[in-house]
Length: 266
Ligand code: KIV
Image 1 (cartoon, protein in one colour):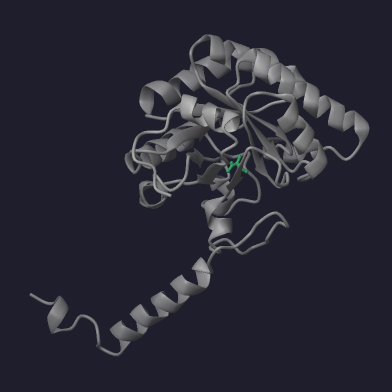
Image 2: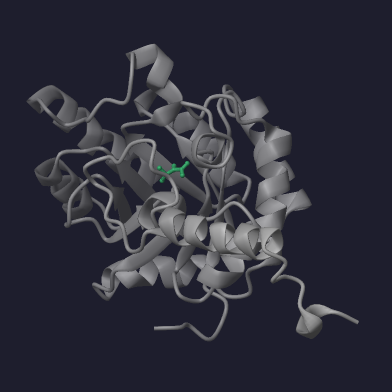
């Protein structure tokens, strides 16, 4: 259902209290964000753009300048949905660096919040950002920015120790001031326990059905990215095939002299 007015951080937080699911998707430009605007609660300008948009195998190469550019573009297409900008790898390594870079998202774009991939060791960074008035979504579990460090994309919450650490991390992030937790690649029962342990909403991706909301990368959801399909992805259309069909039609039209016709000529 299309929303009518700009969604705020309070609307996002209230949804959990009202047991209303939070619908989220990524976007990297104004063209896509204007299509998704108002249809979803949250639009994330994810650093996944390095993979689905830039063709990389990982997200680590995203720079501040790239994320600012794409966040501006996404905001240009949005009037209603809540926009979150992903802070790229290395841009929140210390409190000072994090503050300097997060402030850039607030000053140079119209993003409503930022997202950081964090564990227990980075709670103080989240606290420092929140104290400065920056709305923070904390990303826990499978953190793509740690892919090289961990030797790949690893599902989390598989053993009791990992599970307890994740739950404790979520609790501490809530105390630090995060307004929401993005749970990626976490066993369903552990994501459920995280969701039940905190008052702020959880948004899941590969974390089962008990999270307060869900997110997918748009090019996965609509079948434009087909290099691989993670188990958690549901495809809602076959975008790549549709577009391939259209580009072939276009090419045939030109080659056969069917385009432009009188109708498209001055
Ligand atoms: O960068 C991104 O798109 C993300 C999603 C995996 C949620 O963080």
